[in-house]
Length: 215
Image 1 (cartoon, rainbow, N blue to C red):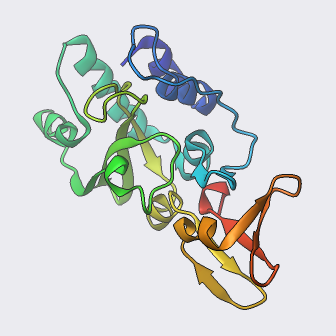
Image 2 (cartoon, rainbow, N blue to C red):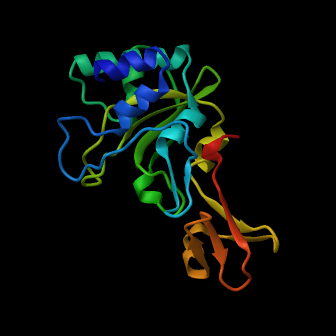
């Protein structure tokens, strides 16, 4: 874990944390893409059906003393040149007598029909001391198997929202009809001026929303 990221995690500075985790580091090459962190924007990009990962992190994750403890261990692993991935972090913690219950391991790249984060993450969710935590790294846009940033650990505010906040829902209020986000382009036209999708047959607005904007 790089020093700037570690300090930001200890200081609970989510903006800098996002900058360090999402923006490709200077040594990273390949198919990386720039990313302008802005925690004050809406998470949902309606036109492109994407959820801003920085806003998602800011609204869904938080810091506590346990997450700081976990990040100190991740920093130690970095200094000791330990080759840690999110899914073997719990084993590393166990070496120091910290037992956690692994609840879920995922890679959002493999679930694009549901997960619409605009950067993919490889993550592990675990439970410790009655609370849920996640350790993950952000993919920077090259080959799906490589090109990840630094690991970091966070407390999850609400475990149910952790998963559904990565998704986008769509519906027509007037007809009480739910639509899959990936079907919207087939039945509607995007009005760039109003920034809304209009259903071709009825003229009704298709409402898109994500819990990444808060709950």
